[in-house]
Image (cartoon, rainbow, N blue to C red):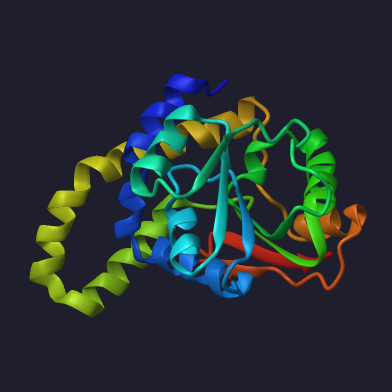
Length: 234
């Protein structure tokens, strides 16, 4: 089982993804799908180090960053003290009142929740979302390959900055990238040996439908085609 020590190390390395083009595009896809309006109260469920939370705040949203890692939330506060943080395990019921949030976003989190607890989590999302509110979820898909994300990045970065600049950029990235591959390998192993289970086609839609959501979107391939992005409304 991946414990708090693992996630502490993982979060120390995680922000190397901010340099990776598929991750940058994923952030844009999530923001565009959320359709943020000034003053929207948004729950970033499983906020990690707050990369998305900070972008939501910059768009004019009021953000609640929720995560089960104290270390991750400390990084969120270092990035922006105006973002509210909540330490919470998403496998348990949410502590917010009914119809509390305008929007909810969940990025690369559902696959870490035991499958037998996912339906309850989606029902909790439905409960705390305001009528007419929107929820956007992205998750790595079953069979995803981390190497494909980096291959996509290298091809795109080569087009943008050329071979020489890319070479020096990759020197800076190589050690944290190796660490990320190692951590991703451990996560994939946990998928085989533990509770992790990556998202299958149609799974997001079924969870949304069974929880009462409507206007459910089709899966959109994102993150170098290694993840599904799906949205719905209450």
